[in-house]
Image (tube, rainbow, N blue to C red):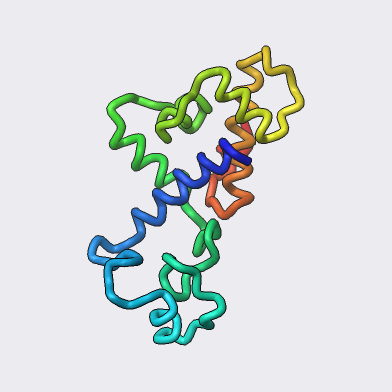
Length: 150
């Protein structure tokens, strides 16, 4: 899922940055290797993934539910445009610094297996927004019910 993965990574990556304390060491900032950190913390060396903090979940797996609404609200508050990400796939994509052109939305529709008429962009856009929210929830995002059912 190319474009959807990009959306999810931008939101979930934003969550990781927001939750990390500002003085937290990032991988590679100390002299301690990933294997050394894993051993020190009692984590199996076989599960030690290079570049990931010791004891961290597998890549792409959120540690817990990611509060999609609060992340996107923070991003929207910091954005110079007034974007209605809660109702518009175009605004959501803009908020995430993605190309929101019709061709990109058609590509996202193909990525998410849209079976409707892509020439009816209004109907496709509504479906895309709902499907993106549903998929975010399916992949560890905390999404309020009102964003899942429009």
